[in-house]
Length: 306
Image 1 (cartoon, one colour):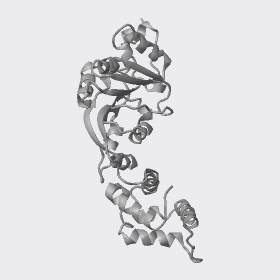
Image 2 (image 1 turned 30 degrees about the vertical axis):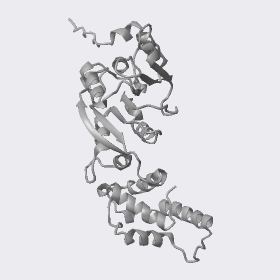
Image 3 (image 1 turned 180 degrees about the horizontal axis):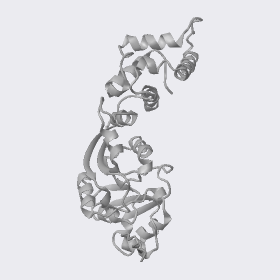
Image 4 (image 1 turned 180 degrees about the vertical axis):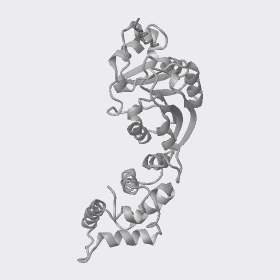
């Protein structure tokens, strides 16, 4: 007799199953089902009874309910109207209902409200843009305890010389102190993602470093385009030199500075890099102080990156 293939069984969140909800992977919907991890994340956030907490992607509310028990208010950002309805139903008629505010829509397009802490099991596809939206948010928040894909978390905490050290690493560490808290296995989620996860604690530097972040970002984009090349080589690219020359001419025009007839942007860039012994340095081994020195040297000579 031919073998009858056994029907594949999958465990589904009971409450969500009753609503006929299927998780949408396009939104990165992987619901954290292990209550011990939720408890541990909230402990690391050191929540206070007076706190306003921002949560991204609350899903079915497993973490939201735990947070609501500890704080003054939770602002939950959810893009899926089906899960919004599930979350509202979960707190309806309880003392928690008045403490929960739900923002429906894409958190990357929304203006973030005031909050003290951010705690979230992040939709992984928005990790990078959300981190920078968070770090550039004002007024300052106290800390964020966020779950990311493991490799993304490793990039956040990577140090100069590490294999995973990149523009994300140096840009994040300029604006915040970042600590890896714990690694999370795939089986703690429903449905299990294809990657391992990790929880990270982010604490913004307050006051922030006294630099123009747009300029800083422009510099690190150039340097990390080929992070193993020297800065001298990175700055010799035609597109880079053209953009810097345009910016310099704009600067001269605004400051009423006469541009010499024999002006050569390539020579000027080389002189600046050699003047601070940075031409032979490589982005993969440079820390935030190194990049600050380079940015200051260029700006002092009227060359800008924005």
